[in-house]
Length: 219
Image (cartoon, rainbow, N blue to C red; front, side, top):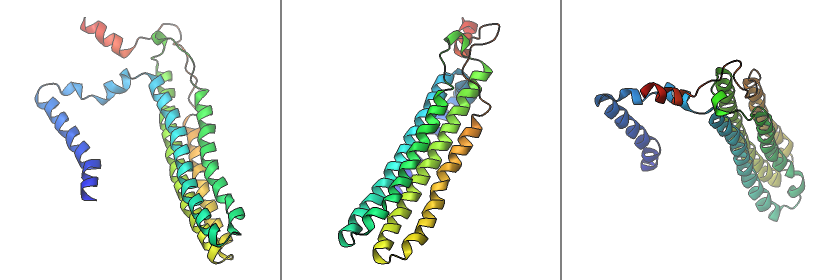
């Protein structure tokens, strides 16, 4: 456990610190510039990454929950066949998590429109790209945790139902509250892109890519 924690968290952090100190003491500290990275990255990159995280993490959470719940239902159903039908509601709750991610992915995709590179780098398009990225990350993370929560609770509900039928409804209430977490993420994701407009060309004059402007100034 100690080595796994070190290689997962300690080693990347140590590498970043070493690289930052090297750039700082060799007179290249300006290269370690987060603001420049954000300005030079295409808004399409942020938007596409956000949509991918939204759908990918949601499907991952749903699959994880179905895997945990399904194995318990099949295992408990061998000894107690009556639990196999009514415990399928836990599978439905897990699948809804993936549907949340697909719906939000479609909503976010409607914001992405074809814009020429010369007219892409505007404050409005940057705002839309960043909003879609963080909105997609928020929705995906909420759905991932929601899927795991519903899966573990559904697994417990199946095993408890096999032992005592009176416990099923009581644990199902806990599972319902766990499934609402994904709905919270969906609502927050909608609020984050509510003020973001579609990608559009710059009004009046054409905008210039920060990278192209930097190269022009250097030359």
